[in-house]
Image (cartoon, rainbow, N blue to C red):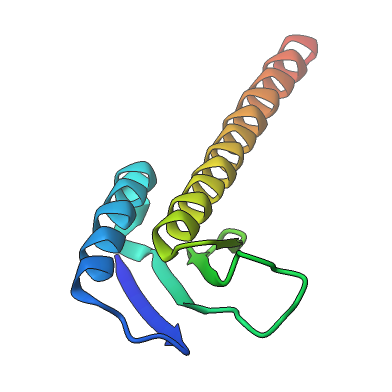
Length: 121
């Protein structure tokens, strides 16, 4: 898995880097055999200066790019960077599960359609 990390208005601390590696490791398990082709683009930083965020001044966003499939994107704000990373990881996992269920459902529907077509023919 190719992981690219970018920071905006923030110096990446070693503690945050190891925490991020732990969280991205669980995404790698979820991707399974697609992990070797996958590229993760992670952006972390401060989102201060905008009044609408209030206490949520840190952000984390992740782009999951798997060739041949749709891109998956999530962004979240939080009072600390760890909270933002947790929230965005959960959102990416939810989207990956939904994408996997969609593919399984399409295979089953296609198989059922072929089977009924073969019965008629």
